[in-house]
Image (cartoon, rainbow, N blue to C red; front, top):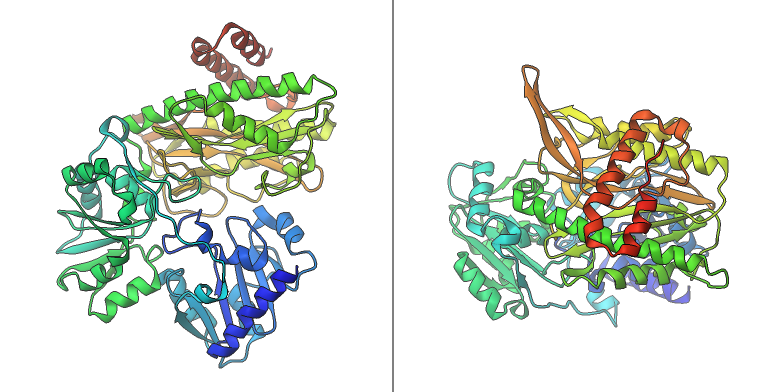
Length: 598
């Protein structure tokens, strides 16, 4: 607590010294990814809140932290006793950052933002919404304020061959340029590390949970330019990039490269994925910018539609991961039967990682594991490794949400396990969450359908109990890349991106009862073409996940005959596909979990 107040005072001293009245501190880095190195964890250093998303604003006299519904309870715990006010986004009565600042500050006040951490879009929005306040772009102030700040680390990169990627860099460049369909000479600017890794068929170790190297990229219709640390370039990588026609330069030279590139080339980038600093430097040299109007940017859009080789990789990853889940569930049951044994959430998270590590293609978790028992599970993004050591008891629910990175695919699965006696409410909620997941899995829909139109299929079942989860139902999933990938999604809020064949998404309805329990059941689904006739083209989903579902908490009268038939078909498929890879003991156990429900 004392450290937090001292750090806030250091920020306020900086504001006074620099003649600024406030500073906005985000969670990200110059590459606009979900996970960042500890070097960029300035918001966490200042507030103590470690969630993956949130923005803190500090004035000379006040401070407030804006977070979304995933972190309401966790943030309340972290900020308890603090002078930092908690702002729960999207709740009635919660002001936006700009509303709060305009209420707190005089009309001639100056609000500072780090020019490297805010996109052009964000900067322009702040300028517009904060008027008559002034917005000032500044260099990173935490270089001086954070004395023991970790350095940025750069590790070696590795190559993904054609047998994993399905397409060469040249083929991907042609696909992207054709989709972009620009007239005249252009230089397309990439700040997002996953887009760059996908384009170049390379992976790195620089970002937690995502196999990325910190890098910048740019391309014309003829060539790709990669900017990364010298530490990343192994002999294998150098040979691969040379054969792929990729020109490699130093990470620190990218801003100058963009500014100095021939003036006749129009600069192109999604306005939400290029920093205000990079943009303003180039404009100061006379460069002209054209925004990429394709949702999420052209590379992200093309990347989201997986090719046949990538899809085959997903299926292989799901098979391997399902075997790990079988072994994990067996371990859990065996230990729970030992009455005197105490298991903790942390131990179970580590056990899953240990089991996955038996596979030679495993490359780590795809996000921080969520193993949440009882009331812990009521926090949608509970942090298993930063919370208290909570023991597992023989009652209620245990929620396990984990995913893995394999060389050829990324997984994300949630199962809610019955640990003992349940209430009628818990059985009802579990059944409705499962029913929502199945309803979305069975969807058939016309081409052009957006995720917002599909969301109610999953959310609607939960709503019949007068309950609601506030996070999205589905997010895109990368191919040995980011487990949370755009631009597609399935959520209540409208997203202009239609769901297309080849897109891989999560399917994860839920119920959370604060301080009591949480239930979430999540599979990964693939959009596929179903039928084409005189009415048009229709799509459906294929479920990729092969992990059995706990059927011991199902109320058949609530689930309904169609969903019951689906779960029986699903479990038959799970057994048929997994059993050849299991030993006799494991096959017998799996058969018991995949029993036909009459």
